[in-house]
Image (cartoon, rainbow, N blue to C red; front, side):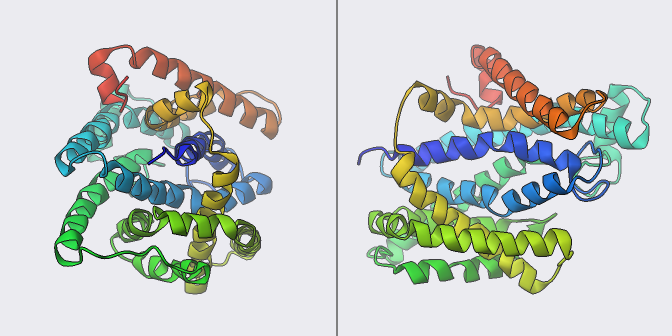
Length: 355
């Protein structure tokens, strides 16, 4: 099978999107609403972050499912488990113990007027009552929740695949119409309520992973998605405009709002997979670099962005200039940090880099 470079490119582009997305949260809707530092509510920033949130992480789990299907065609389950342990579990443990406390330290200073030492804050990190966000200090896995979720989901999916091969060896979901594909948002919506921890649902991400593994990895399905990409784009834009308006301006918080949230996110996955096949199926030095580096960038980026944001907010200038400075400085610092750690054999493993 020829490598589908658009899957790699879509993944690293989604990860790079996290730089502006997390910077947007500094001006999100309401104090302590969702970040370790906060300036004030800027409606442009609030609307943009709201419009991105429903689809960017769901996309990563769907892509992970697709990639897992392709990986198992070349590797044994034992090899996949070893690879997931090295790439997900080890960086999760290290990052939670070493990288994340730096962010909660800044949150303690920024919001709580903390004046104690970093060492004492490290003690608070493990003992203070927390809502698991870390936005007011205390323990949190921060953005590394993605690693542990994906690790658990990957292992469970291996068991599901093994049982499927044993009891349903001829199972194929290759002939699915486009309109049935759209309706897959309904089971995703139902699974959203399964093991939902702090707004991050293991059930939702698990079913998206399975959709990627069993459905979105099928060539006939991918061709269908490509064929109807402009229909998906139209539905994605309409759903996104309605959801974002109702959430940001009408303060809609209801079950129907949740359904619209899921539909918007799912249409984003179909749209991006369809369009990516036409414009992102390329391979060059830049794409090769970020394909290799993207996982480490994910692990590193948020700590450096929070640090950059803490100091940039002290500069008296416009919101746009502050936002730009935070995004650019944290991106450059992350790349520099990655270039250093990837050259240290033992250390690079802690940051999810194999090279």
